[in-house]
Length: 615
Image 1 (tube, rainbow, N blue to C red):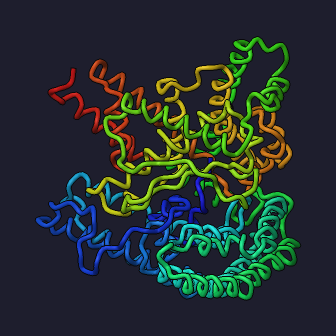
Image 2 (cartoon, rainbow, N blue to C red):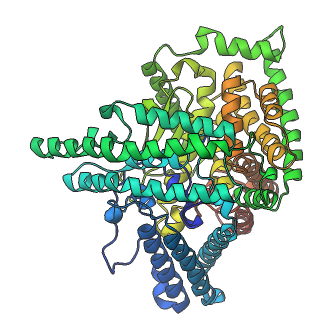
Image 3 (cartoon, rainbow, N blue to C red):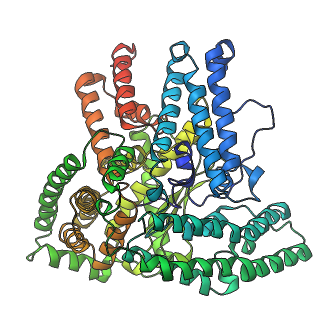
């Protein structure tokens, strides 16, 4: 399931791409004092001029990014820029691109051969991120498609406000400043959307219909229930009552006179001239230069050289395999009918559903506690940061997908599995174990929280994100369920297989849409036939693939690579293979491209062969 809010893939450096994926965490970590060494810098750098230069570049680039992208600074808990919004003016965009080129030039001036192994990897990852971001600079039309089916510019501000701390009056003042600045940011985005329209890049009609629905919900919400007022519903208890009342009054005034009118201007444009220019379908092959854009997105999201055709073939193979396993579950349950009737039964029998939002939350918490107790079987070390289950905001609606919110870099907030309690009537019990394994443990929480605690790594590596690695790990985590006491009954086994099928079918559908020119209805029909989800969910997913091409490919490609590496290590090490140590080898370098993960595991295998205490 997607993490939220939107990755800043069109507006921020790729080295910051994880910051958005830290979810709706409340910013609380303190920035290091001016002149203080950044946390995570290895002591050995003091004796190595090349390493000193490298880490100085990392620190300067991080601070520049925090200042240039204050939204994302909030997500990692840097409070210094919490009164500002990202400047998306043409001048600021050009300055940011120039800074990326300057950083790349500075990186090339550093003698990589003089660096230690960890620093060489950090050097290469930093170079990879800069090169990727610069690759997309000329693709202006693509970068102007900022409105997506499930997230985008229209949801970005509400997400940011939910993540903004409001425990003190000073923090509330920062939020007020952002409310006041929002109309300017909307005006900047309207310029960018018009630029994209002039270049022939407008989101598809079904996508824009979802955008308009979201905007209407935001605009029409009662003031005290508005997502733009949300920070002022959780002001710190230490704020004096009179001050609290004054802050809330100012917030109501800004939301009603500044923010909502700005959002209405955005809506009027989207519903008017922008929608009039929208194509009926969003296949990238139909956009100017769209084939090249898709090729770049496939490489970026999978961190491999696989072509769309190769990925399509992998998807077809895996769909066929999973279909056979689903048929076995039907036989295990002695189901007399076909797949359609079986899925209908699982989705309509009341025994498969919780009776209230509260029992749904309790169900997720119970599963999580059961998994927690089993984790030492598979992991030599576990992250210190705890995690919990909470309800996602009600305005997300019953169809919103569950997601995970990570702790900040300071590690003083928990991770959260955000459950859709509004949609409890459509959340089958048999799907909950696999979903918990993916979004919480041993999935996103275990990986993300562990990465944040790797203090020997520079900050950009502890907070970095690659879809193929992060989502690949979470999907792989689902496969560990039997070893964690999950999927003991056939319905839960089917729930696991359906989640796997969802990601395998994405390989076929995403490449079908954007490389092979599938019409939207063909994609919907294929989704329904293979996954067993209903039509409403199918159309949401297809519109997601339409507006975020390539992203859905990273999940299954990443999982397959991790399984391949595990099998490689087991075959190479024989009785020396320790699954607990293998999992730490996967996790203890933070998020990396799959090619880097390959080399890391090969190095680990060689070291394990020499380990004297191995059996």
